[in-house]
Image (cartoon, rainbow, N blue to C red; front, side, top):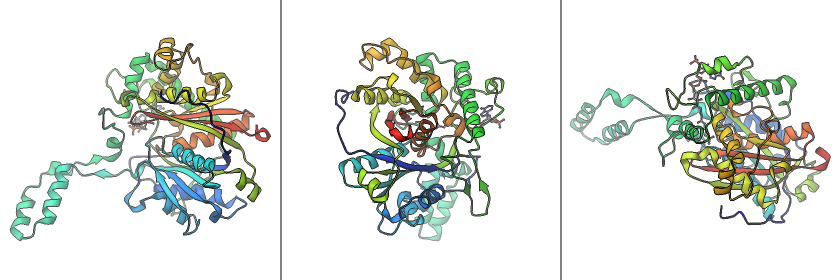
Length: 440
Ligand SMILES: CC(=O)SCCNC(=O)CCNC(=O)[C@H](O)C(C)(C)COP(=O)(O)OP(=O)(O)OC[C@H]1O[C@@H](n2cnc3c(N)ncnc32)[C@H](O)[C@@H]1OP(=O)(O)O
């Protein structure tokens, strides 16, 4: 809480010009049709094609990605080249776990604010279905010894040390979703929060059901058409829409699922967790100068952002700190915010954040507030569903929630919104967005 008394700084405005994302495609136990760069290119190309300036006009590309694959090191640069942005386009990749897609926006904003760039493509991409299967340490050592054995005798000796158990792979994603400091996987951290804030299975399932219902409604109404561009794989198969939503979901079917992370009594199930998904998202950010130079029509302004951290065991609670500190810096309260996106890592995690803000003792002792922060109206929160129904490509979601917040505020003619996400390792990012008069 060291930065809470900072006052908002007057800086050059940062505008959101446009954005697009791929459909979010559920990982179904085998590599999906797109790598991280494929995804970034799929939605980047139509986005760039509809701009009134050339792809080479950008100053920088910044892309969040958690699980970079070895064929695509620095996916930002690979994507920029495949997008035809020119050999001279600087591009770098950022990784802060589930905050990566928002970190790219924040870093881009800072470049624009300080005047060192005017036009930046900032995104996030993730192909969780391509997470590697890893060899166990014993197998790695055995293979290394075998490779280094020079004589036939040494090779035979090495071969003799093989044990079939060595072939059992380590699932990369399971390791990646486990905190290395506290040795809890992300689902277990949600269980810790459910316990701390008394979130019941019924509450978590009701939240999850609503997420599916809201996303289904948004799809049926065509509200996502402004942000989703269909993707096509190299074999010509079309992926037109997000595919994780269950339009026929019921509380009954959710209630039947067994707790995954703390069986048999835990609250967190496959139904009330975010899904493991592939997807990418981009935003175009511009300075005042770029807006004038290219005759652009900005949609919104990035006011500010804030990052906070706490004990990794309760990582899902970090949005409470990040948002409270961000709003305090701008002398705003929750009532000044028209629309909220809180990334749905887990239903129990989002509900714990809401509970913490209503808890007088928590607000006093942890947030240092005289009064509870207060209740966030569910009608203003994740109005079109979230990661539980849509999926959570971890490096992308922070970008998607900002893109969606802007689109939802435009549709609803609202003015001010906050997007926030928890981050494995015990962090959170929060971003304050203001629509421009003409678009709100
Ligand atoms: C900082 C952060 O953001 S932390 C968050 C980072 N992300 C995560 O930690 C990911 C969390 N999620 C997960 O790990 C996974 O989704 C898990 C482990 C919970 C579940 O994985 P899987 O078992 O592969 O999920 P899957 O989608 O196959 O569902 C399992 C079963 O539940 C059923 N199911 C899932 N959702 C629902 C639902 N909403 N309603 C009814 N049934 C459902 C499925 O049909 C499936 O049933 P089956 O076994 O009969 O086929």
